[in-house]
Structure formats: structure tokens, C-alpha cells
Length: 159
Image 1: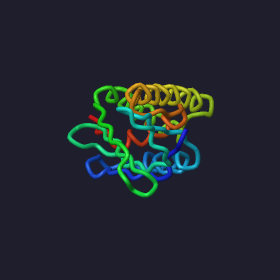
Image 2: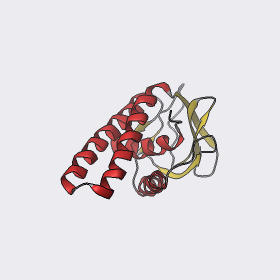
Image 3: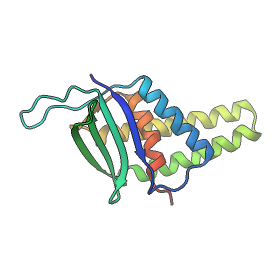
Image 4: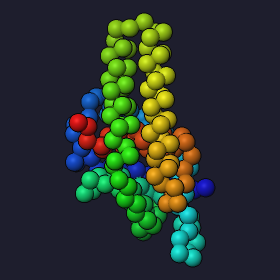
């Protein structure tokens, strides 16, 4: 399986991130570049692109866009995903993250841990949704999907 070596996020259409969410995004990008598993299957009788890949991630015309290029910058693939399947899980994720950030400031460790477990569960749900939506377009492991879901949260409008 190949990997992503560079990530560019176009968040020009996204609402401003809180400092906590900005930090989560930086960590997700760092972790993703350090360790990920991402491949694109061959299509229409063509062999699978070998990678490594550069990924541009954005929202365009209310769709989540994965724009993949080779290491040298040649276009490899572009996937457009409906935001619908992500709306509820990203909303839930933002709410639990806010609860977690608030809890860290004022609650005892046991309560913080309980909220963090719920946050991880919602994060896993978002990662599985991403894997399902990319089925047949790209193959990625759960850790890569988790980190990409964090980045998607930075793009999806809340409200």
C-alpha cells in the first residue's frame, strides 16, 4: 500500500477554527504524514497509481473533494463525496470536543477520561464513515481514516 506525503487543505470556505481545533488539525497533519496507508485501485483496465501521493482536501460546491497528485505533481485522481453522511457525526464530534476542552479546565480526571472515551468513539464512527464513502475509490487503514476525519472536521460547516 502506498502513502500520502503531502497534504494541502483549502479551508477558505470554512468557519474560523478555535485554537483547540487548529491544534488538533496540526497534530493530525503531522501524524498523517509520519504514518499513513493510502492507495488508489486501478480503474478501467488501468494499473493502480503507485504513489506516494499529494492530497489537496477542500469543499467545492458543497461536496468534499479529495484531489490526488503524484509526488511529481501529476494528477492521479479526484473524488467528490457528499457531505450529507458526515454532517451528523461532525456535529456530534464538535459538541463532544467542546465538552472535552471545557472538562479539561474544570473536571476531575475520571470525568475527563469518560468524555474522552466518548470523543474517541465518535471519532471512530467518522473514520468508518469515511472508509465506507471512499470504498472502491481509495483504500486506507483506520488510523489514516481517523486523521483524515479530523481534517474533514476543519472543513465541514457547522450549524
